[in-house]
Length: 153
Image (tube, rainbow, N blue to C red):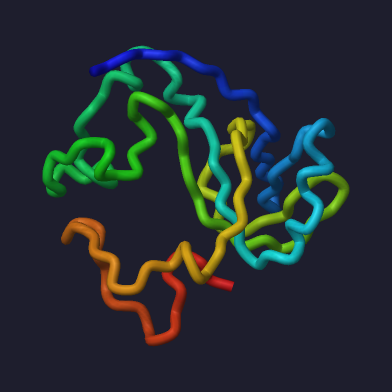
């Protein structure tokens, strides 16, 4: 049975990219939700691919991953493509510090002005999956032993 229900998301903040810093500017209404966030070294930032919020991009269901035509045509649910039915982006970032309603982070791949829809802590015990597999087009050389891929300090 298929039922279509719509719902809305409200940004809790915005990505700000300054010359030397990447920030998540949290809306003042949500500042109490930052309590304790500084205890985490890494966070998940969920954001809205707002530049792709149009009927055409939201209807694309297959892409060549990483925009490389040599990669096999793949369904968007098997990729991190910014075109998809629901434009939710996900990025693991290093939290540098919390200051005046801003999270100063490293490794955020969202553009300046991108709406942030949620922030979650990265939890090493549950978010790192040993021996997880990925398709050949996504694999690179094996990282050095003890390295957290994508979560460099």
